[in-house]
Each structure stands twice: as structure tokens, then as C-alpha cells.
Length: 250
Ligand SMILES: Nc1ncnc2c1ncn2[C@@H]1O[C@H](COP(=O)(O)OP(=O)(O)OP(=O)(O)O)[C@@H](O)[C@H]1O
Image (cartoon, rainbow, N blue to C red; front, side, top):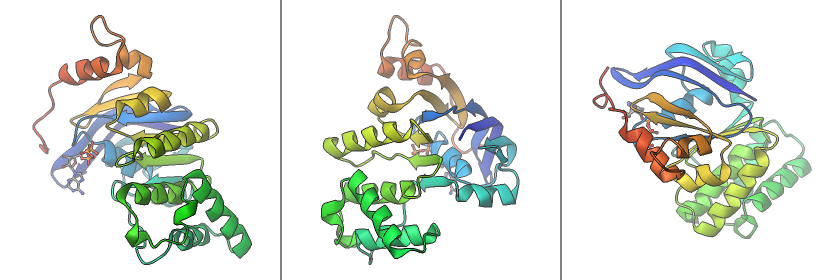
């Protein structure tokens, strides 16, 4: 499910968060990079249909998100991992994922149990099935939140820093899983980890001060560095070549 943004802008009151963002995710895994406050989470909230674009055109799977009905509709097609996911602390992992399936409209208990079991297996959560969410570590809770987002096998996954706070083994597992999902669905993720981009992403955008200052392939980003073909150098070159507007200025 393809996402196209044309000149998209968003403000929180007088704070300008996005200005004139134009990009096309294509299929596969699309990464969003950028310094703190660049607008990544805001763009993901727009894609998930939780915010309304204030200007420009944002089309997700053929739905123009300027319309309230399209934003409502898209929420059923998008698996969303927000920046600060709200899980139900008093439920166990299995209960929470079962409840997620119920909210997705799966009325058959056996089918819900299968879906929850499958999601737990994919995110290596089987041992935690009966553990209360409140008792989980940060990284484990993050995997539960990812399991929640992908449980309905949505055609678009929107993930805000999915690998943040994860140990290397689970980060590797999540990357492998997302790469696999990206073969049949579209995954849009934000990250501060260039290895996520290197190992996962087919395409990438760099945001700075609410503007997309690079859109292309990870290889293309790497070669923007003078004499270099290294992603760190390319990212640094792109970000240092632009002067951001003063933070939060309208
Ligand atoms: N709910 C909000 N209310 C007011 N301003 C906000 C809100 N959320 C974000 N902003 C502002 O919008 C701008 C973009 O923030 P956003 O969270 O989208 O950036 P980000 O690239 O995701 O940052 P980070 O890498 O730190 O997560 C920032 O100036 C931020 O302070």
C-alpha cells in the first residue's frame, strides 16, 4: 500500500512541525531519519490517520487523508506503533493480544488465540505469554507493542522507532521480521539507528526542521558524502548542509 505526500504541512498551534514534505514510499520498507524534533513522529501520526494534514495532499493506498472518512477508514488498514504506545498494564501479554484481535473484529475465540500465539512467536514473546504487561522490561514491552501493530497483518505498518530500547538479539529479530513483512506489505518506520536503514530499508527520507532534505535509496544517501560511500557520512553531510529554521517558529 503506497503512500504519497505532496507538499504536506502540519502545525501544532503556532509550532510548525512539517513544511512542504513531498515523498513516495513505494512498497517495501521506507525509513525516516532526522534529528530530534525534525517531524518524523508527526509525519507518522498523519500516515496513521490520527492527525489531519493542514496543507498539501497525503494519499495512503488511494485514500486522500484530507477527508475524515478516509482517516477513519485508514485506521483499519494501518498497524501503528506510536512513539509512546499505551498498553494495558493489568493484562498479560496473551490477554492483550487476544483483546487486540477482538478489537480487530475477530469474534472466534480459537482464531484469536491462534493470531495471538502467532504474533507472540514472531516477536519471541512466548515465554512472557502469561506475564503481566506492567512487569515487562522496556524492550519487551516494545515487542508487545509491535506484535499489537502487526497482528491483523495490515497492508501498511507505521512504526515510530520500533527498535528503540531493544537488546541486539531482539533488534536483529525485529529487523528480520520487518524485512520479511516488507516483501508483501509497506512498512514506514522512523529511527535514529542507521543500521536499521542499512539492513532494512529500500528507501529513506531525511527530515530536518520539518522538511524532507533527502529522499532516495540508502545507497544514494551514502554517496552524498564527499568521496564516501558510508551511510553515517552521507547522513551527516545531508544534515549539515542545511540550516534548520529556529525550533517551533511558525
Ligand atoms: N503534541 C505536540 N504539541 C506541540 N508541539 C509538538 C507536539 N508534538 C511534536 N511537537 C513539535 O513538533 C516538532 C516535530 O516533532 P516530532 O515529535 O514530530 O519530531 P521527531 O522527528 O519525531 O523527533 P524525535 O526524534 O525527538 O522523536 C517539534 O518542534 C516538536 O516540539
